Image 1 (spheres, rainbow, N blue to C red):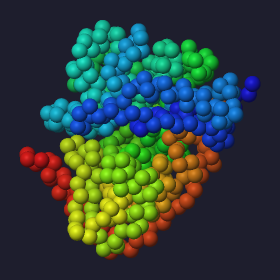
Image 2 (cartoon, rainbow, N blue to C red):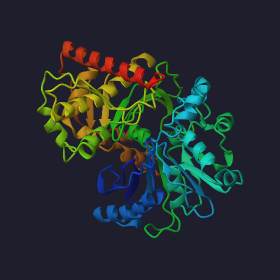
Image 3 (cartoon, rainbow, N blue to C red):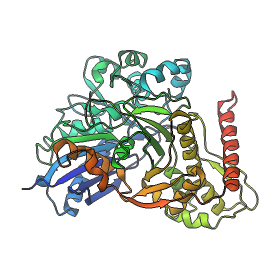
Image 4 (cartoon, one colour):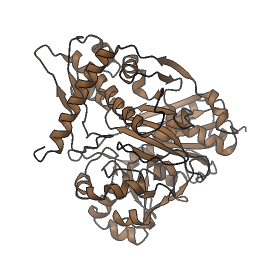
Length: 500
């Protein structure tokens, strides 16, 4: 039977998706399922990893059926995942000791604040700021707060991983405990320059080295399926990358200066910077890009915690729309004279501000303000947060960003994409494959087994569907930016003051 398909597991923050790609990088089958978001306390976000795992099997069967294919036709498996979400499980049983702590979770904010003086040292070694966003502080919390866990960890009985590692463990029947460099670089535990676990960072976070997985290049064998009821034994897992690095790879951003932004729950901008890490002067993150061999490649990254989730809030929280796409129609009815500004810091502000205690704030409400103005301000708030990231890149990276490729669910909004081009003043290229994370994992998996000979062969497989050119004149653009920057400064000041 011809091995003609690559199966990608795209495990995101709010849903799990399985996609079957053919050798022309066409998605010939897919299935997706949302899963439960748990909020045990304000600022805490958790996932049930057993719910995630059970969905993988169901979705795999459905995606293969849609492709009119069989598991015997799978040449390889790729995995891409929500990155910093943290799982700790028993090696003997594979059972998690606690629900997964999600990247959005802020429960470790006090630890980060208490150790803020160590941040320059942490950033120099890891490329990351000291923020609850990252896995290391979440792992430390589990070790300190779940009864008996530290003793088990120190006895070598527990395994830590981000979601990719947990899926690899389950897919291989517990035979492989591994991650790739892109996911490892988001833990606060990896040395940026050596791409290996750092003893000093582990000591700082009180993490026993024995819980950490092997770190491998993003393209290569991570293990083979074993003991599953939905896939046969022996299918190689050959492509693994965190969702944002997978998207960068899937959009064929292989060269220094190539940039992309993915608009999902949050918005994540990455700029490829080549083979040497660039230390950010603007509090962007220096991270490892997905790699095809042992030589590290790097990117600058800016993370906005709330993007598409702000539209979900309009739908599920305020109930002013009944479906996410309706935000465009509602926003189109807004007054052109409105000066409403929405800073969507619903779970804190990410780069370049890094204010974990910030909350969403609206400025400029008047008697004439309606749901339409709030819808427009929400789209503007998403685009303006991304503007702050690109503005920071211009200070860090020679040449800056001259155009940007975009993907993710929210890029289906023409109104949002035009706004993005207008506030940035550069072309925005919406790729034909709007969910490039899954495609990037497929590319990495296929390269490892020779489906495609090299990265150059991929460039013709990821085309641009539409380009949005800036259309806003300088005066209204600058007025919008001025209102935004004043609002953000006010939010930062309020939530960093002693009374905030």
